[in-house]
Length: 316
Image (cartoon, rainbow, N blue to C red; front, side):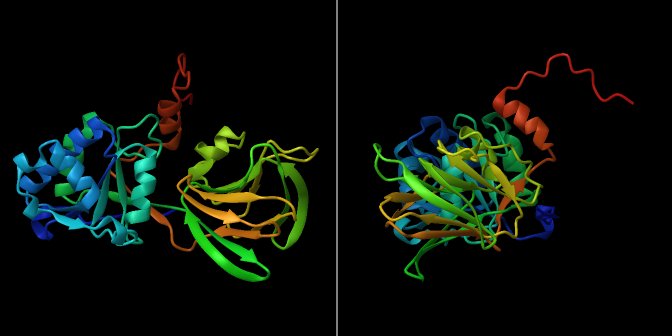
């Protein structure tokens, strides 16, 4: 992970460009997004979004704030990987931020306003919106890079499909009544064969998501590592693994096993018996816009409501 400062001071820079991604099914997210867009446009900020999101906001009266003509609208079927802007502002939960990561051009930082449940990836809460607006207008944020995964599906020695993930990729059984058999390989060497419900490969960012629910460790974002977590494995050695960020993880699906690949719980690829998944760290990171320094420990305590009563402070 690396952090770099972004130019500050709106007076010496062109107007900031903000691409907006909204959980259209969440009334609070629509409300906060609408008021934020109105404030940004009043300050001369260029705002854009997908047709789906803008139409949802219009139903709540976005047109009353300013003309739709002032917005750049991208068709949803062409927006993936093309959302342009200096920053992508996300209004919703972690799922909305994962959707924004799909839409954003590589390298565009994401800034999340949490209107979901946990919102582990978000930078701000609804009560911080005024601060968010001021920071965006002034181009006052830093950029934090997070590792993402690249996965290739290999069939008969040929790559037949590929995808990426910010949190995790998982190979999971395709039918409820039957487990799958997976041979796990790390850096070209066989590790173990698991009869299991599946295997999760995660980033440090994803260590608090699916991998955490499966019993994996919480990994601080600045730690360079990849995780391998078995799901309900019937094996003596079936513990979560933390491997090098430069490692190559391969999952070989046994003949007779039917499975599906999930990427961030959003994108799927059907797998055939004998398929091989090859998982590595992607050289292209996902970037997040940060408005204020915040220790990961504090984020962990706040999001999981951890009991810290009685802490006496740092002892010297």
